[in-house]
Image (cartoon, rainbow, N blue to C red; front, side):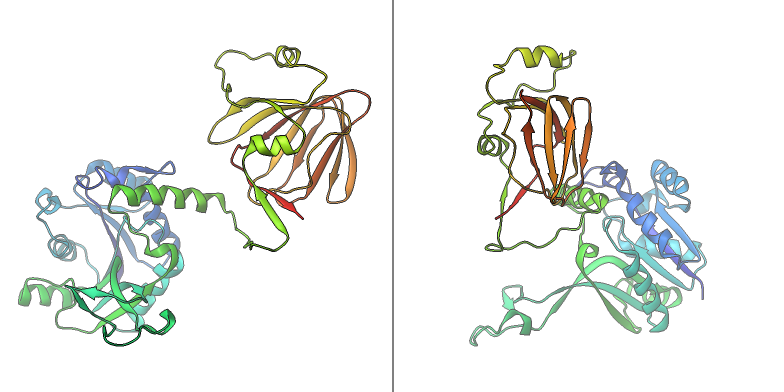
Length: 374
């Protein structure tokens, strides 16, 4: 039983121009699915099916094969049936699994389970579905509810399966038979048809520009490998994000947080000398989507409130003076020229100590959550 994965991808997409080679968090969209299919390790061969040499180049660079389809099978009028039949006729396979590049977050687990189900279930056609467990309507008519009866709790509504399309499988001989009989084979025609339900990120499909924007956020989140712990109203915590108000509550009322990112050299000594040494102040020198760096000057006895950052590490360079750092009950003194690193989720509280102001360069990001245990 020869199992072949086929990833169709054309260059001339209309709704999102050149979407298959558009970078998603710095990686071509098509590379996501190629890597997931390779990682599944359940196929005898993997092909990218395209008319485009540049997409073919990406396929070869990712270590899979390039099947160059005829150009007339990459037009807007060409159907999935058209290019699938062409592929099956020219690439030997018992079962072909089609995997769409527009489903970049298909999990390796789903790909493996889907392929196994296609073989073990002896299906002629296997379709991936996105389960919708909510009232659904087709052509103005109810599908899974009665307008004249009370609506049950959502968990008791009969689910409706919508084609996810990210994964499809066909037994080659049955597919060719259906094409000869009916001029189509996509939905199964004569043969045993099964359905596999996708969940979570595997259901994300990129067809419109708005989809790509959302996919960009998902890709960045997945790349960060951050696991968000649930928090609830009334659990003894409160969260602050607005930096000016955070600084004000920490006793820093003179703040310049807007004139950052100078392309000419910035003298830290000149910045310090431009402020009144008898009051607390802050000056942001860098602010980008990646990080920010802020000089913070505080008087002896001043500091910040005990807090932690659930999703972000931060660090400081001590410019002058001394600080007492209380990191989850452990107190240390840091001084000029020290570098201090605080991992996320570590509760910390700092206080300027000694007989003169203390200055630190705080490196973090402006939109980081500060969580204050109450």
